Every structure is written in structure tokens, then in C-alpha cells.
Image 1 (cartoon, rainbow over the protein chains, first blue to last red):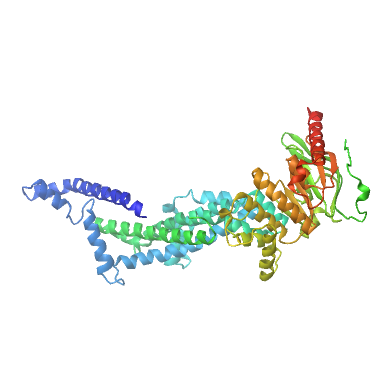
Image 2 (cartoon, rainbow over the protein chains, first blue to last red):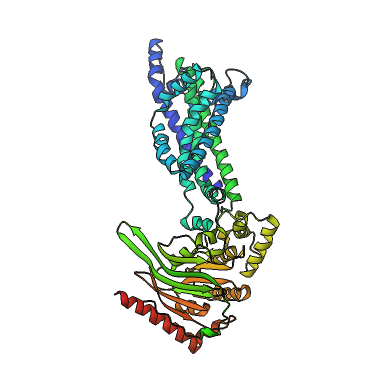
Length: 288
Length: 275
């Protein structure tokens, strides 16, 4: 880790510099317009200062977003409707539910596809074509249809997460469950091992690296699914709702802080999956 | 075509020896897109209890295929084969043999001990018994002390020994070995050959051993089966009478060189038939 700190910091600083420069240039026209209307004279220094302190900037400056995030994450009670912790939890809970169901579904589909020839022929085209439908198009339909039969709140959003995240799990697990070498399968055959024994002793352990690679993708898109699922619900709660509400009222600072929070949550989730991966693979004797 | 010659006096062998593998007129044809491939043709062979039989021949002569037919990993398309009086399929169901592949094929996520206990786990043998038998098997291949290591922590030769221990762990009377030492260097191979001979002498198992090394075949075997390709067939069966506790020194003896010469002649004849 220590070897990476330097490069990471350099990239971070570069992003912040670009962001500030971008904020000044993007907000300058409205700021100059404002000076002109007020018949005010201005200097470049004043212009820069003001472009970084607008109420509804086109591109808010990093420190504005940071202040907003600090305020909405730490300063406000987490039960408040304005707390990002509250909204993050709303999104996170459906992310995790969708991720759980999606992973289970993905693994079960893969097990079926690997073991039953007809399932591969009949299911695989559907699995693949399911992902060609834009999620933004199908998400409102899922919310509406499930809403019509009385399912509201957490579950419809989780269904959208599931819809997105089962796919990488299925594809990777099919590959992973097929990854044992012929010689290993022959070995199991010489022991007259049942399909079930071959699955537990050989196929599943062989598939673990594939599973974890797909879980990292799955958890991140599961979060995306939950956020997308919050958009058509009329912006009640969740990070998606904060994004939507922000855009209704031109609250760009609010949008950016919700966006960054979503990115942090996603990063933390991926790190947690990565940690589990290292633990599991270390127990499986993989040299680190 | 099958030219059977017996160097040593067969009458000396005890008459009561049981046939472990009995093969009559066996053939195997693979149907491929480019037409049929005659992997085995008209093979007759008997492997008796306690035999160490080597199969030697150039690649494509069907020696591995023959071993795989015995193991029920391939099915013959003609002729008869019985293992301990039953079909290869029934023999496999009874776990009648241990198979050692060209590569160790150890499961990388299992420790050496747990690799050795894998077949025992599949056979649903209790845990204490599994550990006990793994200990014994690892001792036979001189790998005790490495139980908790993972495969990648062992050299290639040690990995192959672990795979032999795995094949020994459930104490099948028949050991099928498919070029187990093919990928190892000469020195390691000599050492493992010696160990394998000791093991054979001690356990009195029946061994079928595929190799493409003439010295290895002659050194190890009580019976050498020389094979030839296209179609895969047996062209010579040579019996030897080196004592079971032979050492590597016998490789310098005239008998050894004579048999090696005969094997080489057989292989050469097989080739000239073909070209």
C-alpha cells in the first residue's frame, strides 16, 4: 500500500486542480453576467473568488461539495430527511438485498447451465438478452408493475439491483464451474464421485476466483440499480432521490454531494468484497 | 501380427496366479471429423496379480488409451475386457484401482494431506480413518512432514509423489500409472523409480505403467508390453525376472541391456511397418 500512496495523491491533486479550474471557467459567464447587471466593476481575483462561492453553480467547487457533505453527513441527525447517512442507508439496504438475491440467482443459474445441457440452450440467450434492455427503460416498468400488485418500497428497487447484478455472476460462474481441467475431472471419475461430490469438491472451489471477480462488479452495479430504482418513485428517499430532487431545484451542490457519496459507498462495498476475497482465497492456500 | 515372445521360463511362475486384467481382441476406434482413428486394434493381454506391466511405445501407439480403457475413462468399441472378472465400469464403481496421471493434478486449495484424503472423503470414510490412512500413504512415498503444505510449496517430484500417495490411500490392489515421471528430470526420476519398486515389493500391488523411456520400462517391470502406432497394437510382450528388490545397478548388467535392446528392436520394427 505504501508504494501506492504517492501516485494516488498525485492523481487526486491533479483531479482537484482540474476541478477548480473547470469550476472557475464554467461559472465565470453567469458571474460576469451578474456583475454587469449590478453595474459592478470586478477584478480577476474577485471573479475567481465569487465563481467558487455561488449558490447554484454550474459546477460547484470541491470545497463547496465538501462543506455540504460534511453538513449533511455529520452535522445533521441521521434520522433527518436531509441527512445523507439516512439516504445512503435507504439505498444501501436495497443494494444489499438486491446483491444478495442477484448473487444467489446468478450462482443457481450457472449451476443449472453447467449441469443441464437443455438449460444452457434455453436459458443462456435470455440471460444475455436481458442485459441488452436499457435499465432506465425497464426500471419504471418494474416499479409500476410491482406497485400495482402492492409491492412497494425496498423490494422493487432490490429487484432492479438483482436484474443488473445476477448477470456478471452467472457468466463468471459458468466459466468458473467449467474451469476444472480434464485431468481433474478424470480424477474424480476414477473415484466414481457423484456429480454432487464433483461439484462441491472440484467445481465450486475452482470457481471461487471467478465468483469474487464477478461479485466486485455485481455489488457496484447493484448500487447503480438501486439508485436508478429510486428515480421513478417520486424522489421519496435514497441517494437517487437526492439526485433527482437536486436536479428539480437546480441544487447542483446537493447533486454532487449525493454523487460523491454514492461513489464512496460503492468504493467501500468493493473494498469489502475484495477483503472477503483475500480472506477466502488465503484460506484456500493461494499464495499472496 | 501379435508376436508374443517369452524370454524367461513361464513355467516357473506359480500357476495359481489370478488374472487382474484380461483383455481379448480389444479395439477402440475414435470417430473424428477426418474419419475414424484406430487407437487400439486387436489387443490381447493378461495382467496377473502382482505383475508390474509397462506399456512402451511411441506417441499415438495407444498406450495411454489402453490404460484409460482399463480405468473406464474410455470405452472400447470392440473385443472384451474384464478387471477382476467384472467390466471396467463395475470395477471403477468398486474403486478397484488407483490412477496416477501424467501431471500431479493436485487440488491447489487443499493441503497435501487433504489432497491425499480426497478419495477417502468421496468414499465417505470417517475422519480419523482418513487421517490415519493419509499418514500411511504419505509415509510410503516419504512425504511425511509435508501434510500441512500446499501443493505449490512442493517441487514437481514431490507433487507427483503426493499424487501417488493419493492413489495409494484407499488401498486398491491395482495401480494404473500414466507416464507419472515423464515431466521430471533424470535424477528425480531414478529416485522415484527406486521408491516405486520398493513400494511394489512391499505392497505386492499389481501395477500397469505407461512410459516412453526404455530404461525405465526395463528397470521397473516384470512384463514389458511394446506397442506400435496406427493402428495401436501390441507387437511384443517381454517378461523379465529381475528380483523385486533390484537396484539401479542392474542397468549395467548384460541381461538388462539385452532386454533393452529387444525393446528397442521392437519399437523400431513397429515404426518400419508403418513407413
